[in-house]
Image 1 (spheres, one colour):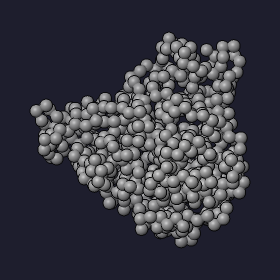
Image 2 (cartoon, rainbow, N blue to C red):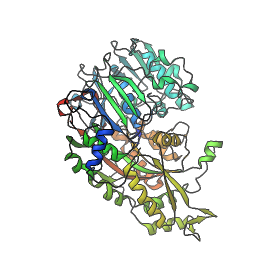
Image 3 (spheres, rainbow, N blue to C red):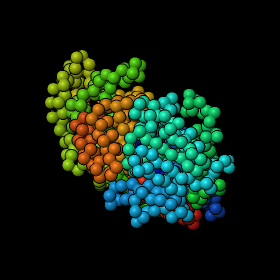
Length: 607
């Protein structure tokens, strides 16, 4: 089974899908530490006498940070997405064609790309859509839904749930991070979607989406396949109370898993949902997402078999893991995730207090941001930490999207001398303490990131020294992941290090759109009318290949403007217990087909 298409999410790698730990560390955990973990840390997969335990039917995944909301309307982090993707249904499934870098959309009886790219077989289909039809003028798309699926309380899932939920996605008070998905719906060009016309449930199994302009079938499928939530449960929750509602912690879904228990900042446990028909209950009885902020502890728990999956294993730790007491194998996926340093392009205080757009006093100039990028030795970070699993990043269109990637762009070199010249041309000159100054203001700031990410710890130290070498004072500070993400969402940070897991359909206005109220992932406040125009021109093309020239120019502009310093693409390396059966890693994600996994209890570790 393939999971339905998902929007890009912040990674804590904003892995959502960020955590922090030692930047250094041996590939082998000392035996005494392992013994302590086994004797006082907890839960080994099997008792000493060999009797089976709950671990035989529980998959344990060590995560960097906790989920924030178990709700697809507002959940933004990777952990949240991993969880609610198993609880809530989607309209469609998606599969990635590696030869072209194009995403295929699949309903029970229809496939966007030819059958050889992966059509639904009807028996294992996990989505709600039986089929769809695109209007000849490309101004509407109509879905025919299955009539044999229900929410977990027995209430049928209908077109009314989809129409209701899209109103929530578009409500400015709720402020969904996915508001840009509604940008082509009727009324959006006038400032507010006309939901009475834009999303209409014609009957229980028919929903039509109407657009104010012609839209490509691919984009229409991408933007109209957001997960619904049950209208009969949420209808009495006001927009002002939506984010605070206890229903966010008590999700009613229809997917292969349902919530069993959630101990915040400790563990979140899902159980196989016996009521699921999308397509059927998950194979593994329980999935535990255990929150383990420290990388060294996560690694040790994987080595001993206390957990089954750990993401973002350092290459230097491969050998120690594979030689440890638990049967572990390393698998890699990518390129979909990149790390970056975000610079607030606008004065955050002016925006938050008065909705006024003013250049940031440090980072408001593209020339300054280019200088910062040239000051940072990105290749040194790659060589010292990622090795062959990292590659220089020049923008947010992945090299895996071969049809749209601009391979003619040369990364800005590490050139401290040229960086200093650029800063001098912008009026930044050394002060008496060696720190650059302009009009009496020192070039000094705090670089924030989330706790638990060893890679970012390593990069942060190098960045701090690189900037100090050209007269910039950079302090490093980590925050608990949910605090960090909320501060980003509220645009409270001037500089930060995070990551993106990008969407496999290119639709970047949620990250760069000039309308900062709608572009909820535009944490930098970057505004460039030509970027807005190029994104719209590209989306207007009915054939993706006709949009390629627009994406080429788009990447050139971002390269020049450097709204963020793009650091490196990451070929993610994940550690898996060999007791897991049936896992299929792909660019769609580590947990791409997790509801099809099974466990071999005979391989459980006996301490």
